[in-house]
Length: 540
Ligand code: GLC
Image (cartoon, rainbow, N blue to C red; front, side):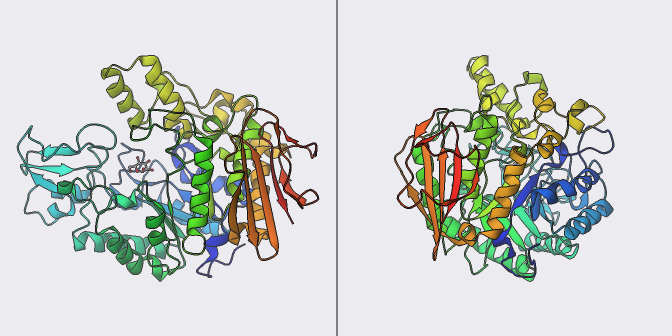
């Protein structure tokens, strides 16, 4: 177990993301709940993780699955009670697993009492907790668009004004310019810290300092000022791990966010690799093949750029991204090999690895008829793009590849009905491949993706070169191989991954022929080729 009273404990830690709605149902309601997570803590302890990033479980109308919070200090009854949360925190601690709550501080639900008060009158003290502009019905303050489609402005006749929302209309943006609002948020965070949570993930944190009059959403001028205040007033009073979601982060900004002086956050989620397989400047639905060489160089840029002066988060999946084995791997013939290969590539790097539920099983994307999708972003995109004249097959193909519901299908626990997720009707369909791909099978098979992840996570703890070494990209122009070296004093690590369905010739660099293999995804062989999706991690 890590010593969590050391302020830098998280630098050795591994995290696991739970999307509670799809993790484990204990009531037959068809949606997961906190007691389900408690039940599965031993499974997570076996995987070896130190922190659970728990997607929002606060009271919410669930327009965006909890990313629309109506009470930051209450648990949604669908998930259980505050007592269940206290028990989850306590039971987690016993196993060395901390809870990292997902705070949505950029916006609230339109059902939050603050917003209900704010929209009742311009004189209400809460009015200024949100972002309002004068206008007339039908004459919007400007033509900014919202993240999930449609305009970013919504008219409220009671006050004769528009409010600003970067996401759905039911997610009004909070006004961070207002110091009282900021204080309320800080008090709420301190209240959760008192309950024993060990960290926070901060939803779309780079969008809090918006200035809609100047068309600014991300990276507003006051962003880092706000973050330093937030950190000083809250996180710095404990030994927490914090990670901000920052789609707009480049390396320079990430250095500010994750500055080792602790003045802002521990790290950010940046998405520069994750947008490479979409057409530049277009929407996420406009796909293009992954530019592999560019992807490798981008990782190298971040590994080298934050070494010693910031901190990386390492992830290939989350609740907003498609399943990586379907995206960058091969989810049919080489599902197991490619899932392990991708994991090796990521887990050999410096930073904090986040495993998203089911990733450790090699869970795949799903194809659903349109009426079975549940995600509002997917449904809006389907409507907007078919209306804009895109052929239905093309729109469906982009949903199969990119819909957020790919990641949100229920966790596959065993081969019983509904994969052991629920005894009721699941809120989103279970992937029919659960009979082959499930946790019970994976636990029983020593060669499973699960046991491979377990081993990767434990290697990070026993090998300081993984957590602290510097990074050199080898074979940078090779179109199929991802090879890199890590070095710390006299310790060296070599990671070799064949990102292809073909056998690929490869000769180890001089001096590595006899190196010790820490982990590999095929039986050992040394004939100068790498098998499809073969991956090895060597040390010397
Ligand atoms: C973040 C969340 C996503 C949510 C959005 C709006 O990107 O990860 O799930 O829809 O913010 O809160």
